[in-house]
Every structure is written in structure tokens, then in C-alpha cells.
Length: 204
Image 1 (cartoon, rainbow, N blue to C red):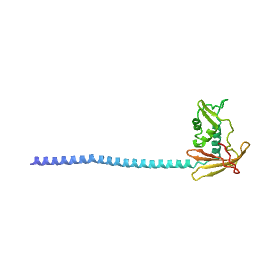
Image 2 (cartoon, one colour):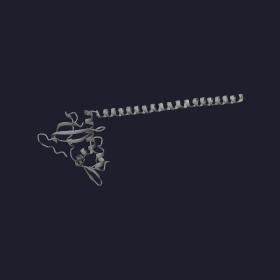
Image 3 (cartoon, helix red, strand yellow):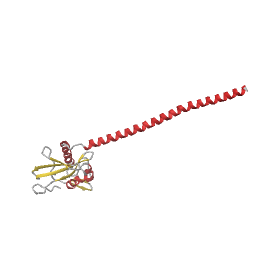
Image 4 (spheres, rainbow, N blue to C red):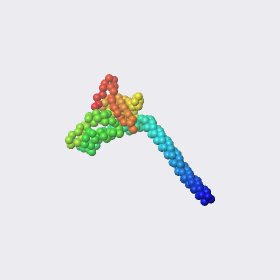
């Protein structure tokens, strides 16, 4: 009888010890799972916050770019670059050196003026043949003159028109309107010569 009670006691004690061991084993696992879940939630929140900050930085950068004004320095730089490119280096036969086609020449103007705006000048001042590109001997077009008075009108679309009236012996009194547009940088998108005293100046 005593042996039976002892056996029953030992069996019960064994069950209790096993239960305690299982409980102590599961508690760290649960804690690790909870810690992992918290860390994952924190990482997701931090990633979302970083994404929002990046988007805000991009928006701020775009706003800064859009606010770049058209200064007199930029006007002079673009208008002088136009003439510099137009004055190509030629040989004694008026053949352009280093440029063999109108398309290649137009590409040199990419940072200054759009293709649509420069094409009339290229067609007027240059001729393309099988052996290369030739310049038509003539005078330069009436153009913006740095240091002379001018006016600026800003359009609703953000473009700016620069207006100037000058006088040259060859052309007499003329007016020129140069429209600038900003897309990553200022470029000329249109050039016109409004009539002066109802007289239209035919340039190109």
C-alpha cells in the first residue's frame, strides 16, 4: 500500500515538473514573437515616414526649380549663344567645318532654342548638299542687343516674352520679341519681328 502511494506521488510530481518546464519554455518564445511583431510594426512605420519625407523633399525641389527667374544674365547668355552657334566655322568655299547636315547643326542649339524656333534660321542661312553643309553668305539677323533697354512680359503659362526695339544701318528700326520657356532650364521657343510703323520686317 505504501509502495502504491509512493508511486502515485512520484507520478504526480513528475507531471507537475513537466508542466512547469513546458510553461517556462513557451514564455520566452511568446516574448520573442511579440518583440518581433513590435519590431516589424516599427520598421514599417519608419519606412512609411521616410517615404513621406522623400516625397516632401521631391516636392520642395520641384517648387525650387519652378521658381527660377529669367534674369538679364540668362537672357544675354542664351541670345549670345544663339549667334555664336549660328556663326559656324567655314572654309573658303563657305563649307561648314565639322558639321555635315542641318539636323546635326540644329542639335547644337538644344540648350538655347527649340528645334521649331531655330529651323527657319537654319533653312535661311544654310544649304545642305551631298558633300556637306554650306552657309549662305549674308548678314546676321537683327537680334537682341545686350545693354539696350528691353521689356519683359510674363504669360499665364509661365513663359516670358522679352521685347526690344533697336536700330541698325542695314535693317533700320526694328522690334524683336523673344519668348522664353522654362523646362529644367530657360530656352527660346519663339522669335518674332513685329511691324514698326506698320512696316513688316521680312527677316526669314
